Amino acid sequence: MVDNGIGLPKENRSRLLEPYVTTREKGTGLGLAIVGRILEDHGGHIELGDAANRIPGQRGAWMRLRFAAEPVPGSAADEPRPRQVATNT
Image 1 (cartoon, one colour):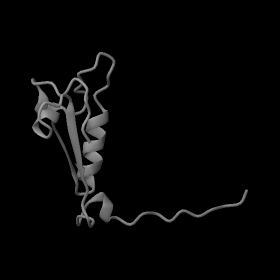
Image 2 (cartoon, helix red, strand yellow; image 1 turned 135 degrees about the horizontal axis):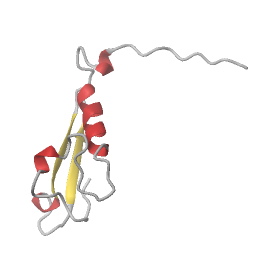
Image 3 (cartoon, helix red, strand yellow; image 1 turned 120 degrees about the horizontal axis):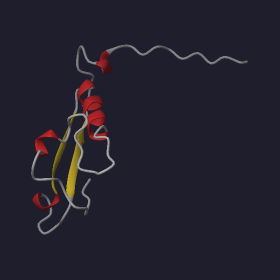
Image 4 (cartoon, helix red, strand yellow; image 1 turned 30 degrees about the horizontal axis):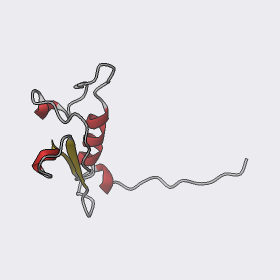
């Protein structure tokens, strides 16, 4: 996904996936941290970069979410999920 917003900050860019790190005045800094953690727990990862590196002259940022094709042994995705039983009440 590529957007045309203000882009990624130059300083502390490597910390954008850490909890409570935000560039927004009213941001919590949890969004990317939660997404990154969920992907990692399931064998995937998230990549962030400048839009101009993908599309010359483009402003903004890009994001790539990579998912594992199969569960990674020992990850949360490898654990059996509890069966949901419908009840009539």
